[in-house]
Length: 79
Image (tube, rainbow, N blue to C red; front, side):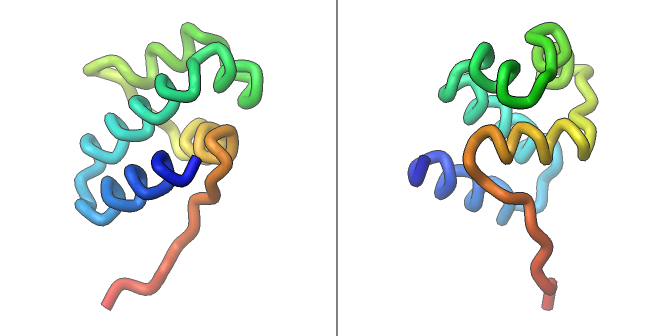
C-alpha cells in the first residue's frame, strides 16, 4: 500500500487529470480489478469503461476506488 500511496501522491502532484486517472487505473489493476470491484460495488465493466481511452472517471468512482486502495482523497490549500 505504501508504494501505491507514493505513486498516487506523485501523480496528483502533476495536476494532470488524464495522468492522475491513468495512475489510479494502474493502481487499481495492481491491486486487482476483481478485488476493487468487490470493495467498491462497481462492476468490472464499469471499472473497465472508466479506464478506457474515452472513459470518464467520476468523482464518486474515484473516491470509492481510492478507499478500496486504502487511501483517502483530501483537499489541501494551493499556494
